[in-house]
Amino acid sequence: MRGLICGFALIALLQSQLAFSQCTGGDGEAYLTFNIGAQYVPRDAPLGSVIGTANKTYVYRPAKPYNCGVWDPWEVRFSENFPIVSGITLPSMESGISNATIVKTNVPGVGLIVSSEPMRSYNLVSGSPPYVPYKVTIPGWATDYPSVTARFTLVKISNDIPAGSSKIESPYSTISYWSDGRKHSIFLTGTVVRSECSLAETPQTYIEVPMGTIRRSVFKGKDSHSQSNDVLIPLTNCTPGSYPSNQGWNYYQNANAWLRLDGARGSSVVDAGRGMLGLTPESTAKGIAVQVLRNDGVTPLPLGQTVAISRLSGSSMNIELKARYIQTSDSPMGPEPGSANARAAFTVTYK
Image (cartoon, rainbow, N blue to C red; front, top):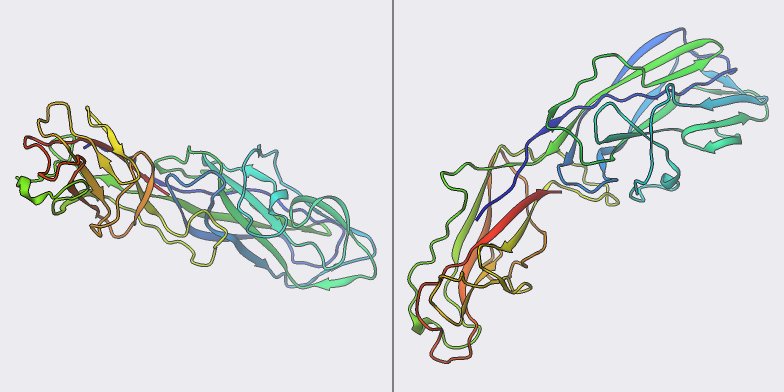
């Protein structure tokens, strides 16, 4: 059996700008840092998956509250001409998310959504609050606002999230609040970690499963079978990751190993739904196949499709399956004796 596994990836530092004008209050010029920590994403998660925890929130509380009203403009915009990402379907994680603008970050495959709630009462000029960019005006009498909340959501926008780490060399401003000429900038830092494992190195390019010598008398007719043997696919250098447990809208709650088995080198699929693999052409036995089961030894593992197998755990682990011979002929005497070998190619993905 053979497998195909890729490596490991890290890091993201993001950038955008929120700009506010005319309102009074706030502090003098300030530069702050918001570290969102390590945010994990399975290597093969679908495009549109939220990376780590959605809506990492930063609350800015200036020494003097913002004082806005009497038709003051309140504008939220990106500070640079960041490339906008289109064609990404996001999970329905909250009302209006479909209207959010996604921009590219410096890290390939990682996009960013920035949002910030406007004042409690406003008239819309343009955009889709709270998602950047938008413009509003504040009607009525001036009101104090003691804080401003900004939220950041990382999104997988392509399969190009790199192996290793990608680091921002320049301290890009993520968001800036403007009030009567006062500037308050926040720098967003953090890492994006790709969850996956490596296939353990072996002297050969396959995993051999000895089935032993089985007496013909074990079989009593069609669908009778032998005892099961263990099948172990060893994985190393695993990065399980840490995932939120309360994001039911997301594509995943954990990083899981998914497995696909296909017939190889002359072994054809006899019954995909029942996990039955035909013998190789050089085999001499007749009326028999190899059946692949889940680790419970009862449930067939479907062939020719990607199936969730196990949650990643620890630095190394095994994908554990079972295999047994199963009679395919109608003979009450059992299958015709002879050599009985089967081969399957396996592919492991992480999502």
